[in-house]
Every structure is written in structure tokens, then in C-alpha cells.
Length: 246
Image 1 (spheres, rainbow, N blue to C red):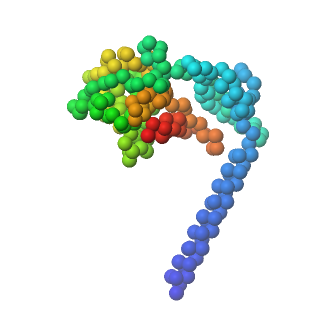
Image 2 (cartoon, rainbow, N blue to C red; image 1 turned 180 degrees about the horizontal axis):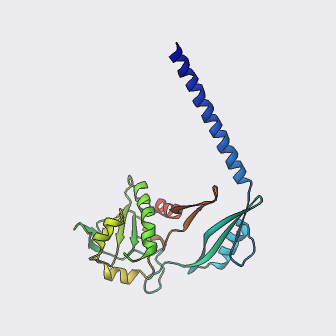
Image 3 (cartoon, rainbow, N blue to C red; image 1 turned 90 degrees about the vertical axis):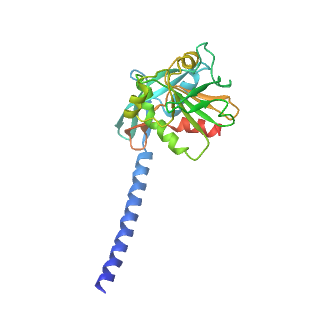
């Protein structure tokens, strides 16, 4: 009887803790959402989110876009102020300065580092994600864990994930220290020379073989709810691109 009474007490205690935790989380979210959020550059005025978005749209065009990168956050009273810098992000284009989007992906026929044939003809009808990189490219290396997460998320789809580099000898040893779960193709010097002017480059090709989206890198991620920086990149843009080519 004493044991049954203890079990009953334990169940009631667990329920109480769960309810208290949910209430505390709700209150925390409510407190965070009550903050007024502003953005500022080093020498610029305070902007709200609408003003920042409007400025970015106004200063962007078909060839270049402004990309905000959050570098710090401070709290003043009931306000959160995000310090950021604006980077000029050119639209991905080939060596002839022709944008990739809307054009067919140039044909290829490679061997991956395991000796398997990978060709555009063999992948006909499948959505493809191709990441161009090299071993001394710091942004390329920073992206790899996030790209691996994307590969894992879409593992049950028929999306093909390829990584292509112009390098050859150093790739196998490099990948032992920096796992990259895309199908690796090395030694593609001529193909990279014709396509890539800025690394990293990721192309999203639809089932018809047309490049539907292209991007140089993922933006850094800043958690606006907890106001703490986390060691991740924002994959939402890449996820949207993948969803649209399936």
C-alpha cells in the first residue's frame, strides 16, 4: 500500500512539474515577444524590421542584393537592438557573367572519388543539388555541417546531392577530417573554370535540368527569441529551394 501511495504521489508530482514548466516557457516567450526590436549599422540610425527590409529591397537589383549579417545584440530597457552589417551579394553567374537561374545545367560525365560514374544523362528526371567548393575555402568548410543536415533531412526523397571541386590529390584526406555527405566529385577543373567565379556556389536543378535557384552561401543564424548566437547557419532558404525543385 505504501508503495502504491508513493507511485501515485510521484505521478502527481511529475504532472505538476510539467504544467509549471509549460507555464514558465509561455511566460518567457511572452516576455521576449514584448520587446521592441530595432536594427542598426555601426554609424546608422535605428530601424525597425519593416524599414530594414524596405532599404534592402530598394538597394537590390537583378545582379546584386544586400544581405544583412547580424554581429551583436544589446538590450536597452524594453528594446532589443541588433547590430548588423550589410554585405553586397552578387547574383551567381558563370565566367561569362551569365546568371545561372533559368538556364539548363551544362552537361557533365564524371567519376566520383569511389570510381562510380555520375552523369547528367544518368540523373535525368531527378532534382539535383550541386555544391562547388575547395579545401582552402573557409565559407565552404563552414557550410558543410549545415549541408550535411540538409542531406539527412531529404534522405527519403529522390533529390541527388553532389559536391564538385577542381582539386584532386588533397580531397580524400581532407574529407576524412571534414565529413561532407554529398556525393564527392574531384578533379573537375574545366567544369569549375567554366561555371564558378565565386566559391562556395550551390545550384538547385529541377527535374527538367533547369537551374531554378543559385546561391553563394548560407547566412549566419542569430536566434531572435533567445538573443543568443548559435553555431549554425540558416538553412531555411536552401530548404525552400530544394522543396521547389522536387
